[in-house]
Length: 225
Image (cartoon, rainbow, N blue to C red; front, side):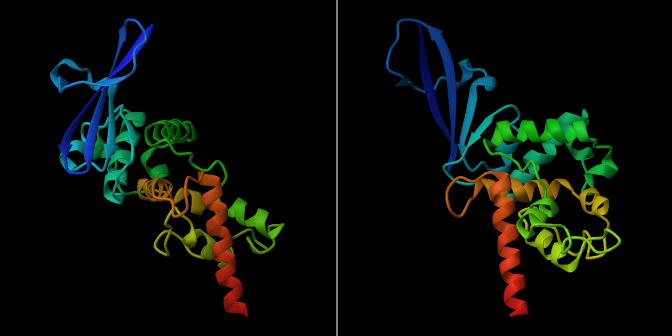
């Protein structure tokens, strides 16, 4: 049988590291043991709470369970580390430029999303803002103009979304591929941070997209009224 030995040790205010070891023995109730961190492998480490800057570098391969939410900057640092690992480069080589300009391809995005979902225990959206907006409207007529460029309403929905897009990224009249091509690690971090800090319980990325789209439509309708 297998029993679990949990070790908790405080690294700093608000942060607890839980080291988990598996030992062959008769089934027992899990117990809290004294600190023996020097004997434990980092691969069994689970981090609770909000880490300070000096702990961020220790997070590779760890499962993060929040009792105190991570700050946006801490989330962004983890996103950059994970992207660097996917691309096989150093973290400081990941820039603020759009990810597409850094050689990030669709398969890299899939791997990055999977890694971040495993680490943060959240679900990133499978859809996108423009598709969610079209679904809410029952069609694409108000999402794209006659040429296929995004409308002012689509712009508002994108700015309202958890990705945190701004006018510096694109504006109404942009092509859809320009919208997706503008995505940076900062936008991924913004989405992750929102998912880790939900205002009303656990929520998936797609649910968050829909909620933000509905809020954008409510605001747009109030302006018209």
